[in-house]
Length: 271
Image 1 (cartoon, rainbow, N blue to C red):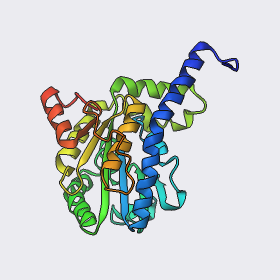
Image 2 (image 1 turned 60 degrees about the vertical axis):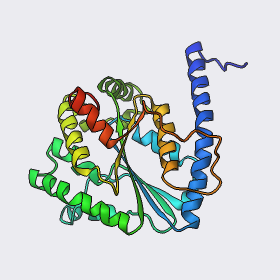
Image 3 (image 1 turned 45 degrees about the vertical axis):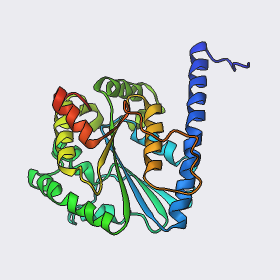
Image 4 (image 1 turned 30 degrees about the vertical axis):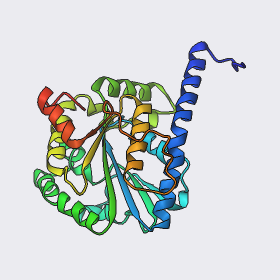
C-alpha cells in the first residue's frame, strides 16, 4: 500500500476517517430518500442544532447534508442581529428563514440563543429572557399545528473535550477562524451554561417539539445517532430495513432523561 510519505500516525488517522465515512454512507443514502419524501409530499422540516461551542454541531450538519440535493435544503447560521432586527419581535429574524413546502432547513443555532448564550453573556435583559421562556413553547406549538416538522437537538460535549477542541483551533491555522472571543470565555463560564441548559430543558421540552440530547464528545457516534434520529422522524419510502435505526442509549437521550441524569448526579454532571 502506498503511504505517500505519511507517518504511521497519519496513516492510522486516514484509515480511521475512511472507515467512519464508510459507516456514515448508508445513513446518508437514507437521508437522500428522506429528502425526496419531503419534496414529493410538500412537507416542511426544520432541525435545530444547539449546544455549547465546539460541541460538533457544524461538522454534524456537514455530514447530514453532504449528499443532499442543494435545491431542497438550506443551512441557516445567523450572525449578530442588526439594529433593525433588534427592534423587531425576537422570533422575526428566524421566521424569514423557515422552510417552504418540500424543503428541509438546518439551523446552526436558532432562537434558543436567548435561552443560553444571550443570558450568560448579558446580550439580553432578564426580562427579555423571561419573555422568551414564556412565549417559545406556544410559538413552537403553533408551528407544529400548522404542519411543521420540528426537531430540536442539543449536542452535549464534556468540559475536557471542549478544552481540547479549543486548543486544536488555536494551534491549527485551518481551524483558527472558528475561535472567537466568546469561545475563550466558555470554559470559565461552564457552570453558568449548565444552569441555563437545565432551565431551558425544563421549560421548553414539550410534546409538540421535545428535546433530544446527543453526546458529542465522540463526533463519529454523534453523527451516526443524529442521522438515525432524523430518519426516525418520518415514514419515508424505500427504507433500508437492514440498517439499525434504534438509538444508542449511551449517545442519544430524550430531554427528560437528560434532566433526570442532571438531577441525580448534580446539574454539573452533563454538558
